Image (cartoon, rainbow, N blue to C red; front, side, top):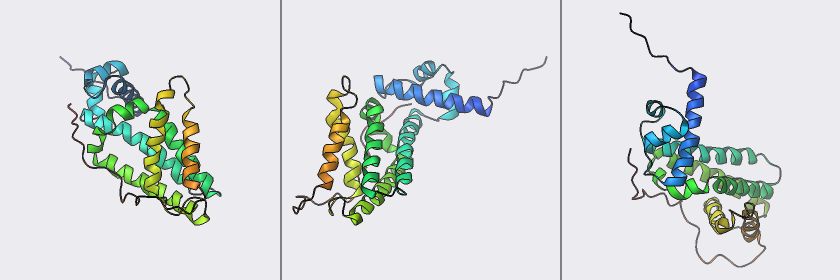
Length: 215
């Protein structure tokens, strides 16, 4: 009696399934938090549970993959802006790109952003993003377009601050974040002789969080 060999998914099918999983997971985590099961994510994506584990060894890996996608998107935008002719406008455009990503995926970021910091890959991606932000900020400082005491770490931390400020308005006014972006950008470009009252942070706060992810 012959035994049928299970069909091996094609590369295009594998890429499609991975994208379906990432989209479904981001949506499901945002709605229900990290306690959602792998089986529920598979069902939401329209694939089998085994397909999930072919792509991701655990739920923590799936969380990290989603966060890495967001970080890589912003890093790529920032790297491209390093070639822009106007350093001040490039820095502003980088900040706009970052806030827009956080606004687009705000529920995911708020619910599961910190557990993903357990991933070394995510932590490294955040450091790369900080380095790109520092290069953009340094260009604007050299031009005299921003305060001399503003750093790339300040800029990265401001991104989530702008999103959080606009968050109560975003359901009814999804573009409200743009107002607070301009207020924040005006703050770092202000022509003032006053120094900031506290030194810049030496690094981003990436200490391992207490939150654990099962699965």
